[in-house]
Image (tube, rainbow, N blue to C red; front, top):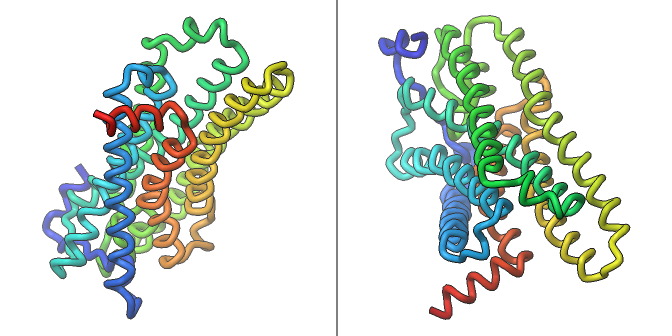
Length: 307
């Protein structure tokens, strides 16, 4: 209810991504081009998975969930940013701001858990191939994907509930291109130190625990690959796993840099830079990495283009 109690106040004002740069239009054009590439790549990737029955496997099911998360993240941030820039109206309502916070945090948390699930999937496929159809059956895969989404939803509900319970009695100018929790907390006239410590603790859970699962899974995978007698088997396993690790590195690199800093060490410019990384650049690179380094996806693409 705290969100709707503020309806008598003015809307938030998003200052934008490049509001302090003389090359604002050029930089905005680059971001828009990257966003269009990300949108096209993720939609095409989803269509390929749907069209080719050989891609109807748990690994590609999880990859499709990753693409849906990336599209949700972009759809939450980019249209509002583009509209504010092109129309010159930088206002966003309290409800719209709360929606952005909810969706961004939800997708961010869900993606952390999903990447850990994907690492577990590769661990079972490489280390226990005979048990793979049993351990990674479709019911188990759907439950793990649902649990990833629910983990993100739980985190986002807490963040939205607490952030919009604080009083905002000074300037409502958000030095950002979307409503992000740290940027909003700077505007509050209440003491938010306890909540900032809570966010830091949540980041430890949401980032480091899944990362621990990923590191442990790939440590076991590496040991198993080294024992493989077949060179072709080693190469296939390493190619698949290195692709996933590239995506993990991209996502966790930006997320840890963005959220594992204390509030006193954060700056608006640094927050904007890291945010564009995980809202636009990572969604753009993910489908490219999985497509260019995956023979099955390239075969499916050639098959569709051949038609």
